[in-house]
Every structure is written in structure tokens, then in C-alpha cells.
Length: 549
Image 1 (tube, one colour):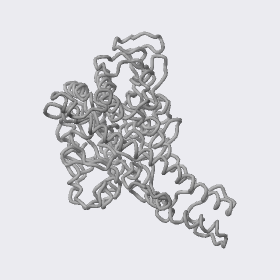
Image 2: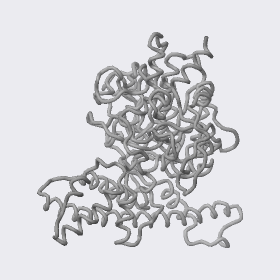
Image 3: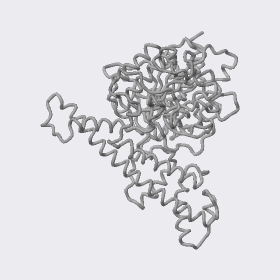
Image 4: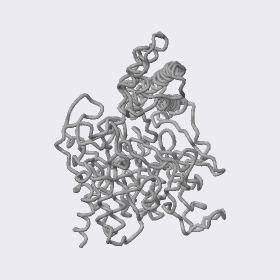
């Protein structure tokens, strides 16, 4: 997912559902609960053995490497929403195209992209404009197929069309259901926000305060029925919030973000009339076309991509913000992911761009449920495979078991076989208990390789800011950082060796009994991925050292 909501209170939804009666237990934001009471800051860098949290052991790995000299600077392409290349903690960490003279309007290096000094934007217009929102692939397929089969029955279509007609029927059913759910959830959160603000305002007036938390709420003793009612409702919410330090204004902010998320779904994601592609000015069905977009790799909202980039590469030596996992690394920003579903054409071209311009690793923190252009994406993945580039992909945040046909892009080629350079990553929390897998994470014993820290990850945000985010979108760059650490010191490693090292050296939690994401069921952690483990940089470095002596 491109934007992970920070909804950390299922109880809040349940409280208001009694008032409105239409809460759907499967609505999207409910999967995105924070899984820890309070994760230690920078916990993803810590070590399971030394620190008692299920981090990556990155700090320990750097200690192991302190007397060794890196052999190369690793370029990690971040295909995402954009990256704030001016962020204080990413200075000196952004890739520069040395073959390009900035601002001269000439394709100096003849790579097909004019003035691509710091990457490329495949969802921008030649005039410098940008696509911010786009529809979901489900909506686009609904529009495409409705023009062909809308109003027809199976008897109306030719025999050779029946397979596609059956596909249209599934698309139509899923679209109508998902659009209805988005509308319901938007109305639900809008009403929820209004009710919560009204109750909060009553208590603020009683306390003569601009903000308050659970402790202040618990101390209120009044006979005012209006205040008592507000206190009762808010107390029920605060008693079930896992983060006891949250203030009422922070809860209101979370509600507003949830409302805006579903409002965006209604206005853009599931709106058949919405099509922003004119901004780019290309034919999105022409997969041979690569010469479109612009040279602004930041775009209108680079929050997601900037957070991803910081996890990988935030400066480890400037005493600012955070430390990224890898030190000798440069981020190549490639903008291809809007607020909505990415297009297969843009992802294929982003992979080609990254490979052709020297990327060693490509991080892909995005995904969707349909892929009409999978053939083109597969071709690009095979190109990266031939060129020795490691691909790392986030498994997704739908609390579901992924298959080769319900989560894209993926390692499984449309015809046969799978990519040997691909790693699929689930999200884990810092606790070695039943909450080890993030409640929102996708999983698969055949499709997900292993897990990585993806809950309460503190990283860079646009404008020199920092924030905790949660999602497999955070887990994938955690692994990209570990892979970059390996390749900086052991550049002779091939992608399949990097993949094998990372899989073989995971912190093993396969026998731990855990809550199965999306289900009221306890399973072993080993049932959720191919390895039953969490990435570990320290062990990976040890194995790489033994393999390359």
C-alpha cells in the first residue's frame, strides 16, 4: 500500500459503531492497527540477542564491519511516490546522474530522459505538472470491460469471449462491492470524527484546556450530565487505545486521516469518471513507449517515498533524526506510484530506468490486486534478472494470504517459473510473542520469503520532518538496506546469492505461536513465510564473509 493509515484503536471504531450500526469489521483501516504498546525508537536497528527486540541487528553488523573498507557505493532505486531530495538526513545520499548537465534541456547522456539529474517521474507531465491521485486498477478494468460487456449476458457473447466475460463479471461484482464499502466507511468516519470532536470540545471547555489525555480524563469528577456523557464516551475509547500517551488531539488527527483516506477512495480510487492520465499525455496502453514524464522525482506528496528512503539510507553520522540501515548507499528516486494504484506501464519502465542507470537494488513498496499489463512487468523483471539487479517487494497490508493471482507485482512469471532475484517481504513487530507478525501484513508460505520490521518505524518525512509509519512498505526498505550493506562490502555476490544469504540467516522464530493476520486463529510463525524468520543483518554479514574469503 502507498499510504498506511495510523489507526491504532479498533476500540474507537467499535464504540461509534453502536451509534451508527453500519460498521464493517472488514473495513480497510481496521487491519492497520499498531501492534506494539510502545516500540523503542530505532528498534529496527537493534538485535534480538543483544537488545531483546526483534530488530535487524544492523547496529551490530556495522560494529562487525568497522575495520573493513567498503568496496563500492550501492545504488538503491526507490520506485515510489517521490522522495524529498532536500531532506536534511538524506543529504549526500541521493543519486546524481553524472552524465547529465542540470537544466540545459538536453539529454546529455542519451538515455532517453532529459535532465534526469536525480531520477525520473513517470507520472508527471512535460510541463512540470504531476498526477497526485489515480484510480484503482479494479476501477480501470471495470471501465474498460464495461464498454465491451456492459448489459450483456453469457448468451450474448461469442464462445472465444466467454473467459473474458467471466472475468468481467468478477470485476463488476468486486467493483460495486468495494465502491459501496468505501462510501460506507467514508460516511462512518465522517460521523465518527464529528461525534468525537463534539465530545472532546465539551471536555476541553470543562477543563479550560486545548488538549488532554487519558490521565486528565480520569480525574474529572462532575455532576454535569453533558460533561459526564462526553467523559464516558471518551474514556471508553482511551481505555482501549494501546498507546497510552496519545492525546485527544492526536486521536482527532488520526480520525481525520482515516476520513480523508476513504474520501480519496470515493472521489478518485473508485470513481469511473476520474482519469488523470491526460496530465502525462501518453497512451497508457502503449507499453513500448518510454519517453514520457518529467525530471521531478519529488512530486506533490513524497511522504511515502521519503519515509522509505530514510529507512535505507538516512545519514548515520550527522547526529540528526535517524540512522538508516546502510551507510555506503545512494537513493535513486523514481516516481511512479500515485495515491491510488500504480500502472503496469510505469512500473515496467521504472524497472528499466533503474537497471539501465546503474541501480544494484530496486525497492518496490507498492502493490495491487489486478495487473492487466503483467506481461510487460514480467519482461522488465526478467531484464533486471539478466542484469543482476536485486528486486525487493512489499507483500502488502491486507491481512491476506497472497497467491500468484491476487497480489501484484510478484515473482511468478505469467507463463512459468519465478524470478531468482526477487524477495517478497512481510512486516513484523518488535515483540517475540503472538503479535510478532503485524496484524495488517500479507503472508504466504510459498510467496513471502521472510519478515522484516514494519511496525512503528521512525523515519524521514518531507520538509525535514520525521514520523512513525507502519506497513510492509517499511519492511521492504529494511531488507533493501540490509542487501545494500551486503553489496557494499561484498560486491561479488550475485542476486541469487544475496537472496539465499538473507533467507538462510534470518532470526528463526518459526515455532513461535502467533496471531494469524486477518483471522481469529493461532498459527506458528513458520506457516506465514518460506523461512519462518525475520531478516538479520549481523548473521547475513557473517555468512557473506565466509562465502567470499
